[in-house]
Image 1 (cartoon, rainbow over the protein chains, first blue to last red):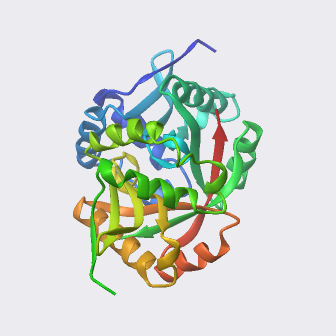
Image 2 (image 1 turned 90 degrees about the vertical axis):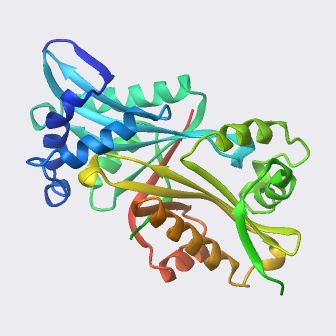
Length: 150
Length: 150
């Protein structure tokens, strides 16, 4: 396989990113790959926020993975800055290739460069394969993740 | 009891906020109420970030509660903006007074005003009382929360 590059996403990457968000058991019901307008609005907001890092993994000229890293300053733990990983998606052609590991390792390293001392993420309770994956990468399931739709 | 006000925190509130962060079974080991310097640095960063809302609840002239609300734009779920609640603390004199409910309800309402469609939080697996509290307020324990220290 050709070399992998992990770089900031651009608006031109949105069709490929949204296709990956939708190609997922949970995402299939939530996304609209035929209507990119709401994603473009969100992308503009992300691109203008220095604490937001939406990246894509590219092999050759094909977008094969994505994630969103958010840097969150805070008071607790003596003013610790933490990061949160969201929206991790790997193209179906690449699952099992080790790309997920490379993307998460990138996110952990970038968090360190941004002076974070803690990296957090939540994973739907139904994604048991993902839980094992994160535990192999040194994450601990220390918390219960609550959500409320409004 | 006198009226409650929920307002943005100022640097003058930091001693009271840090005292509450430290007055907690988990926080006691993590915080340094006798050395506010790292909290002041973090507070400056929070105060300059329009997506960060550190608030205090004040009764009379006493700070009795705090939380941090972070607004997170994102691509998934058709460009949904979500919020994350962190660092919820209630002064020991006020526990059981309904103040926790008022603070979380404030955070949910503020999230709506900021166009969020989802409010998230994680709670340490050992805080079972807190889990029941959040479920009573309409939060669902849909996710597993992972953390990695770096």
